[in-house]
Length: 330
Image (cartoon, rainbow, N blue to C red; front, top):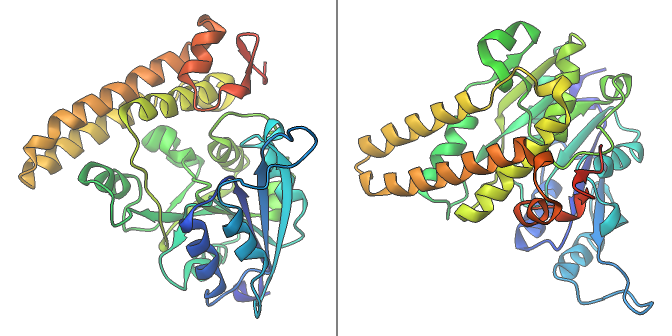
């Protein structure tokens, strides 16, 4: 079968989407290689007094997607109760609804940069050893200088294929794969049991580690591009890194012995050098403060089991994930 003939479904968890989600759907419609289906997994609020809250932010964008006419693919929307949402489990459920050869996962705020996103991702699977491929993330127009450089650091212009042989050289980056926009070969995904059912974060890296350890490869397709970046506050950076570290603490079989700190230090030093070269020395204090909050959040998350439940919930972006001082994984 030619790569261009391979069927691919796009699976997108959705929760209170904004205009970026509309742009995402519009650009998927314009792709040279179109998906067979788009499966939306819409997280809904708890019912109140027996009636569904119809005034949720983003409902108009969901309605727009569902009412698209003249589309070359089907769009389906499956509702997920907020209490049942899980980064791994919800995506695993979405995968179970697909029969396509390739499973493509995106976040609701990742906007294709051109009409070749699916084409370039499909091309990566011409190599039979590839179990997954992920796209390059470009900063949005409104992204700050530091965030823009971070995207360039994590998503360079050159393609790459990562295997188990790269573990000593790349460390934790060997397992790097982002479900902001990533595709998994169904046969490999099912062989390895799919996404873990419970995780607060990093379901993509946990899956990528299984793929690498099973002898398959991970492709970084730099020609497949999406616009995706954040403007987190220092507090939000702390919380995000707290959850990231919690996921690493919960899955020692994946992350034990692979330090993230070294990669973080490298990013900070290279960003500082970039700011100096560009005459943006005034941004270095911001970089130091932001990096400090990231590191503190990471340290706290690594040791979350020693913390009281009240503090864990205060410091996490996903407080509902925890119960009785431990995560629901434990």
